[in-house]
Length: 112
Image (cartoon, rainbow, N blue to C red; front, side, top):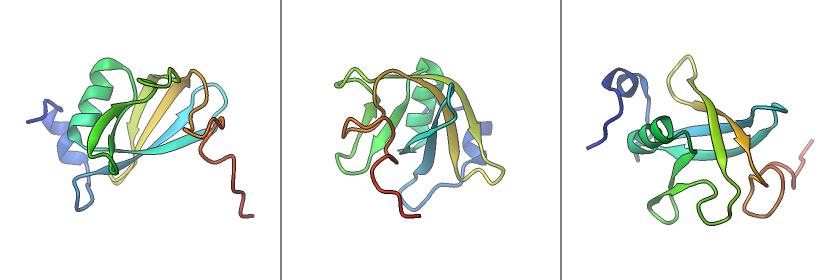
């Protein structure tokens, strides 16, 4: 059972797995760093600890950004979009955001 504020939980529109996409943006540059997935518990942990916490769809477990790499996210702000189906985190990113070592997860493949 999560401790997420029921008023916040009521606003979320989750996918079939109970997840909401979380777009992560650098507070200093405005760059989009990554996309993670959150359920109610991950959002609650993020709000209470100030550290980006996500649900790993591949590992089926929670992970705190930087817990193993040291490339942490200090969360400055958390917002919901107008429909409640996307979360926006504004963070101070310490080190690369992408597991590949790139600054953002969107550095490698420019399509247009």
